[in-house]
Length: 320
Image 1 (cartoon, rainbow, N blue to C red):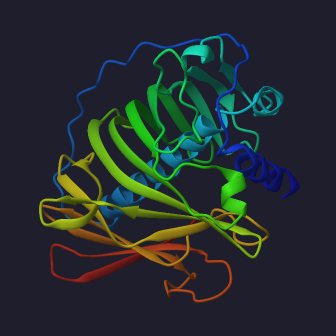
Image 2: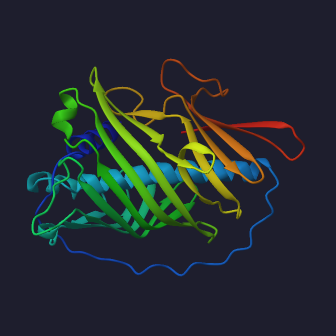
């Protein structure tokens, strides 16, 4: 628990600072060739809906984690030495003078929960000088090169290729946050996702991450911020591993504590709805073991509901 808290503190202490100028060795891996996989017909079964819910949850959590790593790399020299102590991850800042930093992953994280390989390249605007991350409207482009995350508990993996654009909408960093200001990051992405069964899909992302501080707790609130088709809070859209076009709408924003003493990184009550041509999957975060939304204390996990092919309502509850 102490190790876990120290990692969270490290993330928050450096997540909003400027650009570093230090050096490490850069390694990049060429994109993988997509594998064609025959998928089963969508049937509304528990196994298929559970897989879709897990895919979306894993995609969201690993994207957030990677974005935090990338932002952490944009900091001053003394803190960079601390960041490079993160297990099996090195930072190449040899091109930081032109706004480019590369993160390379080569194995297990410090908690031995996942194994990560591949690289992430961060690029800040450069026009003779680098626009630092805390500047009002600063935008970082984060490119994923075969960034593969494998859960060690079940050997399931996701591989990311493509790019994220993160905009510091109102500028500022941790100092401004602690003084009571709100920090807003706007995220746009075009990602190619390769699942553990070899299925390759393209997903688009449009989200806003809002950071607030109160009573010693720093909260990150995630909302879909785009109108896509008939959905007014669209956050992700594309094609799932079953070959179904989908849109994820967030009618109720998802929040979790990033720093403090309680419930770190456990999403509080919020709702995400995944619409497909065959089935609608509603995921509710911040529930107890029975699927009841919690109004106090640390939540157990999330539940998802759908109506199966026989018009029977179904529900599954999973832990975080």
